[in-house]
Length: 559
Figure 1: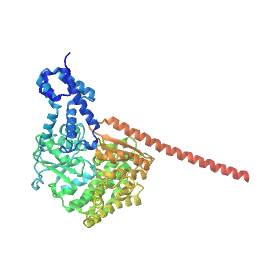
Figure 2: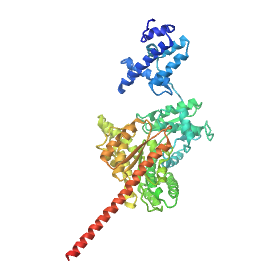
Figure 3: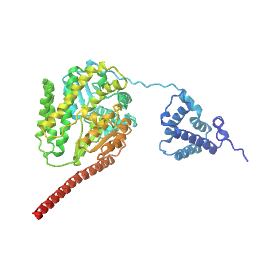
Figure 4: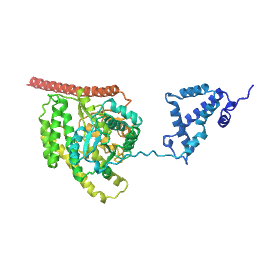
């Protein structure tokens, strides 16, 4: 009887693989995989990526996890993985192949991996210089169609030729998938894919274009958009194209000369864009003449562009009334439709490319979309400065002038609601203070990663204003949105029991049919609620009528 060799002696198997049979080597690999799978399952989440110096065993498990993922590929269970490893060993008769396979799973190989220095891959593109201003076309991904039309004229009069892209379709997604890792968030994939699709369309002189990416900053993955774009350009041999990163807190670093006058005009463009967006969704679902609302929007954007040119844009109330009067001229059907609020990650909320043109889809399905303006997100970002000062004892005096400017901006938004309320029958929007108040008691102001408490506040404010149906549009895997949107649905429903909320994940691999079916289910519930309320009103009316008749009969009998 042959002596049974200990299968745990991995080092001996590495040194003398010829002394072991294929079955024994398979058992060694099997035990090794089982051990590491158990370690991975027992490892707490907070210890998934520890410091190598403090917990080398956990670091080893982390590296093994990445190796197992590479080896698994199309396998999904540990059993399939073990079978695949056995097949590899059984098919390979060369001892050096077996040794290499075992070395891949050995502590020795892991230690070598740990000791390798990390090298950051630097990608450089030329900066955008003032000399390029007159000759270059600056391409910008689309997000806010109405607002960006107004911004385009503002930049054009300062000598910048900005072009907000309108290309869409599967070609954009395909370019994103080819050049951006598919685990990166969907907005990054679409924004970069839209830029690359435009570059490769043959429409532009590749030596006379620059690319601009607006950024919100913070801890979101959006902070890496610029690096991802530069890496994609390098991959396609286009690293000579300048990339402009525009952040509100670092405008001077963008390469563009942004004057205070341009900033003021951009703020007013947001005021007017928000009002047009708000009123558009209250007329387009009910318009008697199809396309009338879109024509009014085109006329208004041209008129407002002239206002920015001649300086009359500063007359805020007068321009608000002009916008309101234009929408009041649209003939509307007398119909009752369910209102559906759209909230979510800022790109997915506004960009038709990102949310599969959600607004028009809801209109086509017989609903009225309700989309709050981008001003709330701007105010939320500015408000975070004061929240940090309050929570972390920051300097209060230096924020005095910022607070004054902030209050003036909020007053401009409040004036919009007053004009709509006093001069029309349209539903007025809530201002930032209302949304902030709605979030209190449900989520802390300190939750400010991504859309933070603003998203939760928007949901509650919409529900309190009669918009009980809400679609939360979010990129698949967006951690901040999963917390402040999907993670807060239970809390919102506890506070507002009549809420009808769904969270829709958008991703290249997500089925559009499934997304639309879930939205149709939301609309079915919304329509049932709408009709149910009407039915209940009819029942109550009949009950009151019967009670009145009974009183009259009783009175006549007594008489």
